[in-house]
Image 1 (tube, helix red, strand yellow):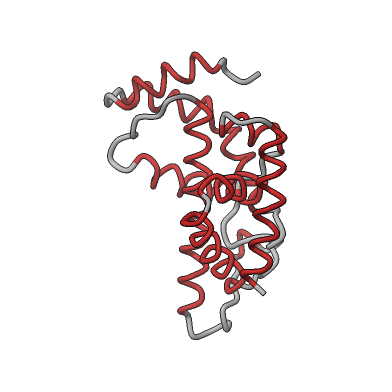
Image 2 (cartoon, rainbow, N blue to C red):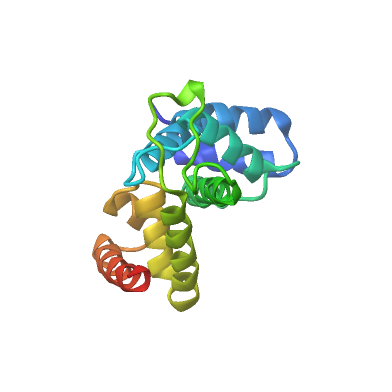
Length: 185
């Protein structure tokens, strides 16, 4: 059973002050939720990646915390930022794979991830570039795409994360998808 949001908020605040025990407890409590978020992202349209859900959670958490955990308002804020960091990890890996001379932009597989399918890194990079342009035009629509597509949240979860209504999220999702399809050709 997930920890109550008030407990998470207290752990986030304590961890932001440098409390190592609170940070460890926070990671332990949110690990399953973070792994679910990573699994949802890896299962999206691009199929899989060279990272397992566990690897994505660990790399994103390391980037997120750096030398010290930043201050977050609550669980929703933390999870929204975690989704953004996971997206950055995947896009950075796709860009790195695109620079590789071997594979023509395809992401290589490790033995640990043999069940994974290779993905075309160029598609992920193109989507990320279009999403950056959408952030400049309409940050709300871009956040909806990020949470729905990259984080795998449903409409209600996205609405809660953005402190918005499901109806507003649906409108933004529909408009953003149309805009992205036009942008990406």
